[in-house]
Image (cartoon, rainbow, N blue to C red):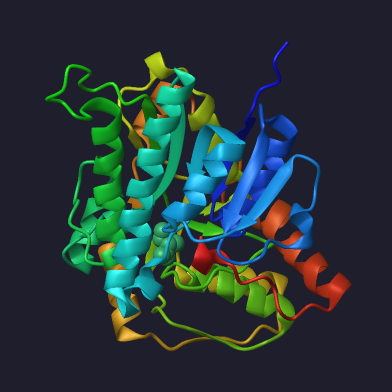
Length: 356
Ligand code: SER
């Protein structure tokens, strides 16, 4: 029997980032294939495991992809690499290159792989509440939980990029080359989640605008002062990282007939910055958390919804978060950050979300 020439893998871009860490762990245990993990920076020792093939490289490097596909048969793609919302405002053109051009390259790769393999390629894409743009804070307060189709007028480059890539994914899955005989048959099965702000006990993000909540928590656990860059009343939806990984993998395994849209909100809990401060102080009474709002970043948060309506995800593929705010803090975030800084004395948590 002939040996397969290429190794079947699930590809994860931006694997060294916040979502990547948890996703790699999950897929190693529950996934169907070995993992091809790409990141701009060398992956840490936690990636040195059987079944993980780490590659340092840039998603924009077409030569790299040309080489990788000679070795690996890509069966599914989790495209996590992105330049987050605050970072991308400093270099919008680079934001566009990474977030849009990068996604286009990955979608083209998926088309080619689908054709070689004569099977559809699941393409999982984290979008964001940044895809929304509410005009002002009073509209935000009145709007409450927004649906996927509401207020799609993002004000950040990152938000524009994510919203456009949602459409790109839909185009590639449903309307690709519609003037050819094979119209609409790209073989790409694009599925996307609009994530709220994510909070992980293991990593601290950088470059995002929802970072104030995880930063507050990690600074408190380390005993370092934290000047919060949004005001007391700033409200956003958030989600604990284990639920983020669960929602992504649930969507990936949902039967295609169940899905009536390609982009889903997923919600967990929502809080005001001062409420979160109170909760953090209850666990770390010596924490020094002050509010020193940065007008521009606070302004971005004001355009993002206070909460999301995730009814379609609940109805179509059974989404239900396991962590509300109490459980996230009591059973995951506080014990794990406490252990992290007490055990290791590490005052430099991994700051890797920026190169997702
Ligand atoms: N957490 C992201 C950011 O703040 C939004 O998806 O940029």
